[in-house]
Image (cartoon, rainbow, N blue to C red; front, side, top):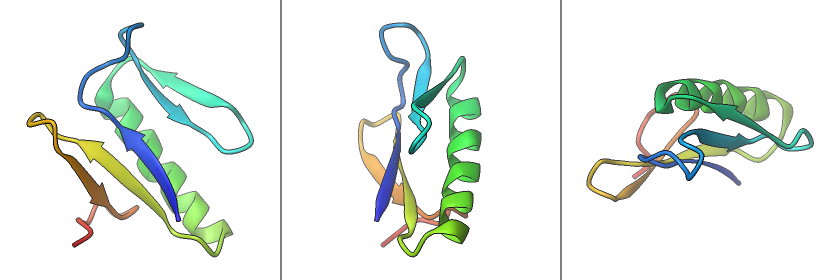
Amino acid sequence: MKLIEIPFRPDATRGWTVPVPGDGEKRFGSREQALAFAVNLAKVQRTKAVDESYLCVEGADGQWRLFTADLLPVK
Protein backbone atom coordinates (compact mmCIF):
# COMPACT_ATOMS: atom_id res chain seq x y z
CA MET A 1 0.00 0.00 0.00
CA LYS A 2 1.28 3.46 -0.92
CA LEU A 3 0.10 6.71 0.67
CA ILE A 4 0.20 10.11 -1.00
CA GLU A 5 -0.23 12.83 1.62
CA ILE A 6 -1.79 16.21 0.84
CA PRO A 7 -1.71 18.62 3.81
CA PHE A 8 -4.28 21.36 4.28
CA ARG A 9 -1.74 24.16 4.67
CA PRO A 10 1.26 24.89 2.43
CA ASP A 11 4.79 24.15 3.57
CA ALA A 12 7.38 26.78 4.53
CA THR A 13 7.89 27.69 0.87
CA ARG A 14 4.16 28.37 0.45
CA GLY A 15 3.62 25.38 -1.78
CA TRP A 16 2.54 21.76 -1.77
CA THR A 17 4.90 18.90 -2.59
CA VAL A 18 3.82 15.52 -3.91
CA PRO A 19 6.44 12.73 -3.88
CA VAL A 20 6.75 10.85 -7.18
CA PRO A 21 8.23 7.34 -6.81
CA GLY A 22 11.47 7.07 -8.77
CA ASP A 23 11.23 10.70 -9.91
CA GLY A 24 11.73 12.86 -6.80
CA GLU A 25 8.83 15.19 -6.17
CA LYS A 26 6.67 17.79 -7.85
CA ARG A 27 5.77 21.17 -6.36
CA PHE A 28 2.50 23.00 -6.78
CA GLY A 29 1.30 26.50 -6.02
CA SER A 30 -2.12 25.38 -4.83
CA ARG A 31 -3.61 22.53 -2.86
CA GLU A 32 -6.11 21.87 -5.65
CA GLN A 33 -3.29 21.39 -8.18
CA ALA A 34 -1.43 19.07 -5.82
CA LEU A 35 -4.58 17.05 -5.15
CA ALA A 36 -5.42 16.72 -8.86
CA PHE A 37 -1.89 15.53 -9.58
CA ALA A 38 -2.00 13.08 -6.66
CA VAL A 39 -5.30 11.62 -7.90
CA ASN A 40 -3.83 11.02 -11.35
CA LEU A 41 -0.63 9.59 -9.86
CA ALA A 42 -2.60 7.17 -7.66
CA LYS A 43 -4.63 6.02 -10.68
CA VAL A 44 -1.47 5.41 -12.72
CA GLN A 45 0.15 3.54 -9.84
CA ARG A 46 -3.00 1.45 -9.43
CA THR A 47 -2.82 0.26 -13.04
CA LYS A 48 0.92 -0.48 -12.92
CA ALA A 49 1.30 -2.15 -9.54
CA VAL A 50 -0.23 -4.79 -7.37
CA ASP A 51 -0.30 -2.42 -4.39
CA GLU A 52 -3.14 0.09 -4.16
CA SER A 53 -2.26 3.77 -3.75
CA TYR A 54 -4.33 5.90 -1.39
CA LEU A 55 -4.62 9.62 -0.81
CA CYS A 56 -4.26 10.82 2.75
CA VAL A 57 -5.80 14.30 2.80
CA GLU A 58 -5.76 16.68 5.75
CA GLY A 59 -8.99 18.60 6.33
CA ALA A 60 -9.43 22.14 7.67
CA ASP A 61 -10.13 20.55 11.06
CA GLY A 62 -6.64 19.00 11.15
CA GLN A 63 -7.95 15.46 10.69
CA TRP A 64 -6.31 13.21 8.10
CA ARG A 65 -8.69 11.17 5.95
CA LEU A 66 -7.96 8.27 3.64
CA PHE A 67 -9.35 8.17 0.07
CA THR A 68 -9.04 5.85 -2.90
CA ALA A 69 -7.65 7.04 -6.23
CA ASP A 70 -11.28 7.74 -7.21
CA LEU A 71 -11.63 10.06 -4.18
CA LEU A 72 -13.94 7.66 -2.38
CA PRO A 73 -13.50 7.62 1.42
CA VAL A 74 -11.91 4.50 2.90
CA LYS A 75 -13.87 3.26 5.91
